[in-house]
Length: 499
Image: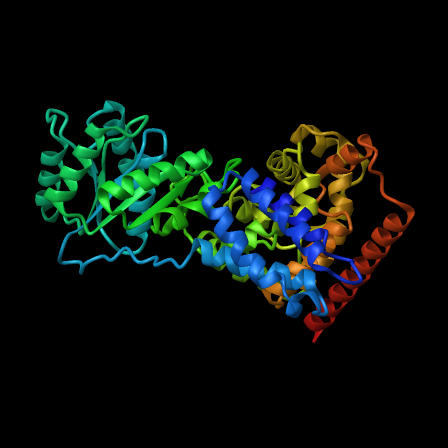
């Protein structure tokens, strides 16, 4: 998400670094590049002009130009103005008490992901202890009724539909009346969409709004449509007075224009963002976290929140105890890899980790998720004794494991060698805070770790980007250091057991 915008802003701000002295001319040149990056990301022109005026007013002045680190000052200014542009946001759904029925209405154009978002929102509400009822009010597209029924079945939520009716207003009224009889306290209306905005669509939505009087109306917008998304948001808001926007498909190649433009152009806040196809891939929108992502700072808070929700906490506690005792086997590594896959793709995880931009770029063209599956296959082909003690894996065992996993024997050898270093690092991470762990992960990455089967290294060599002698020396030092640390921890663990 936002790769082109990230690269553009990074290049623009890089022009300010390393200069002994900054002039107003240097600053204006850099700000021009920032402006160009925003326009290339399909940010609305009026938004770009307003944003750049606010940044320039603060950046071009003696307090910044004569500061000790003007480039960092400018990054801080851009960061704060990005937050101002996208926020503030109220994440509350303004639900009534459980003995009353709250009605939420979702609208949007066809193809925006509206019906799927209804399912995601229902799942979110269910996890928060509410009882949602999905209403199939999109009578223009028969497949929408079937799609909503399937989603309701997947998440265990009731779906109200009337295939005989041709009046969406009556369908919505009947659903609200019957909500209490099925035990629902939140009704989610999946209304009709079109391929484009027209008068008939707007009249229909206005009727539902007037007759049902929903507590909240949310517009679902395809984040990949850029400027078109902003234009449709403005048209829907003029007709319905929206309470919020839900941006979808932000896990794809979105340039970022809609995220940066919608709030400014319409005055309507972005409430949630869709970051994947799975029904749990709906996140609250945080302007400050999005600004960090756009500036390549990562988004650790969201990553930690998702890990807390999706990881098996009991298993994590057991793993922590083992690592504190200096124990980390290939079976432990396998369990941690399986936990990681719950967060989504490796590309997504790395984009949310600060300082991992270089690694993410190095992985362009590499199927990291396939590499993870291959690693799991290799470990699954080992015996319990081999997972516990990889030193048992001789040439004969290596060939057997390779055949079982469908890989080359040298890939088994690569995994064992890398694990030998990694196990020391993992045990040393035990008991440390998230900041220290992230720092250690970054050091591993810079040292050449997280390179399953050596594929990335081969790719770099094929493109001529070989490691320098200094880099090779640093890598060897890092590995030797971690081996010494691992042996020390294992020795301490043995001594503590004897005591």
